[in-house]
Image 1 (tube, one colour):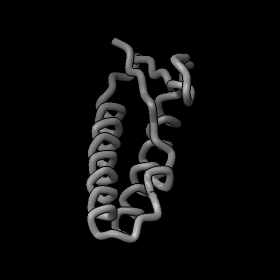
Image 2 (cartoon, rainbow, N blue to C red):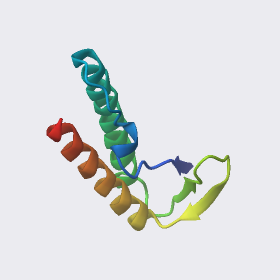
Image 3 (cartoon, rainbow, N blue to C red):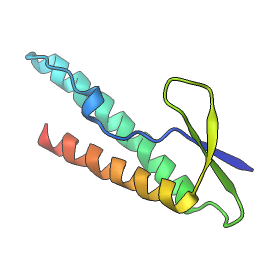
Image 4 (cartoon, rainbow, N blue to C red):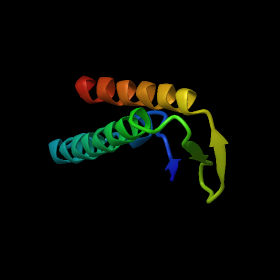
Length: 90
């Protein structure tokens, strides 16, 4: 079994500057969805067997490179924390 990860680095890319309440609600819902997805990624990486390989997808391409599981988990946890902070700041 191989786990392919596309880890989000920050929720800042999802923020738009809209003044309407509906736009902010939509933005908040989208960010909440991304947070849920990131939680699944972190859980999958946490429960992955020791001998399994993890591959990271390169941005804007279909190319995957072998990555260190611990480093990838750490990066994904940081991204999740960043998204949660951004969500609370809204």
